[in-house]
Length: 173
Image (cartoon, rainbow, N blue to C red; front, top):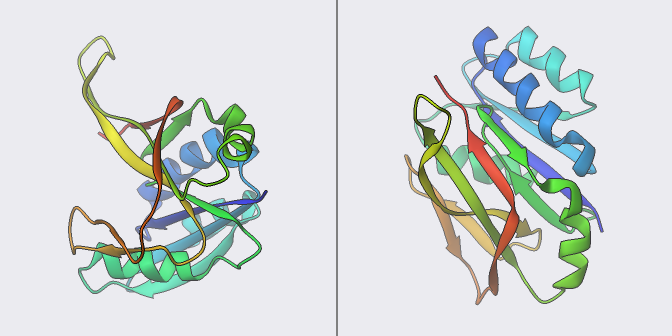
């Protein structure tokens, strides 16, 4: 079972630093990395990080729609990848070590949600926590909608499961 990682990133030097931290947290658990730089022109620092992790890079001229950029990014993933997990550059993962065994144990599930820890207090305790779909079967069962705060729209009936264990931490400034 192969898992692809998808990200859209801003083409700038600060994003390259965040991207490196993000990829370091997840690359051991995925089989392919597909990153789309969304902007007016590619950034060399971002390209170097993508190359360092063996990722496949694409470019999208930004049109103020996160959904359009994510749909393009997902379209870059070949069919041999059974699932897609997605992150933002300012995310890191925790608990992905058993993700493949978990997928094998739930063969009829199309999408999986994990805990998303979005904001932290001064002691690094999470103060905003909710479920977020982060792992999707790569069969065209969903598409991204919404220009900002984008989310999935199912294109057929999908079976969803929330997984305890894997978490995505949003570590932005």
